[in-house]
Length: 182
Image 1 (cartoon, rainbow, N blue to C red):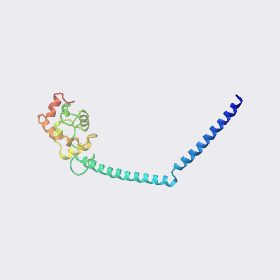
Image 2 (image 1 turned 60 degrees about the vertical axis):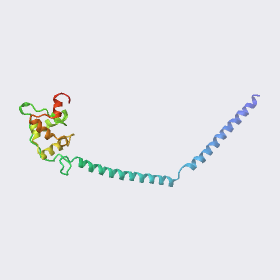
Image 3 (image 1 turned 90 degrees about the horizontal axis):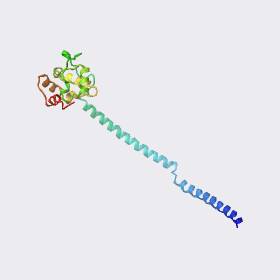
Image 4 (image 1 turned 135 degrees about the vertical axis):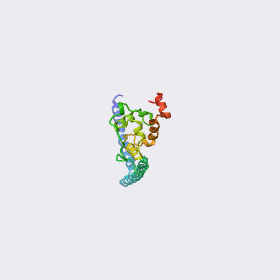
């Protein structure tokens, strides 16, 4: 009885091998037909390249538009020229505050602790200094406030400084004195 099993096992192994070879052959036939030819790859690559070029042209146009908007937005004094560090005329500065104590420039709306420190580095310590700035001096300060360009014009520092230098208060300066700000 066990003598015939050897023949059966051998026959089953041969059939399994034959089925595997036949399956590989049929799979190769099916997958070989699915591969695109060289013409199809070239046309796909050409189409993709055309899409990339179109996208790049649109991006370049958008970049030019944004650069124009940036140039217009950085014209703080309205002279049609984007501000640069050589813009305007440098105002008179002080090496240190008069009488050893400067004004609290944070009472000007738009001036926080970092901007006050930057003003001190530039030589501006008092409200009367800021109140006396001409349009050309405002343009210089706007262009040279690193990280805060245009702030003087946008927040109307000169008008606020005139009030504060005259001993008046603004709504914002009242809040600063009351401790509601900073």
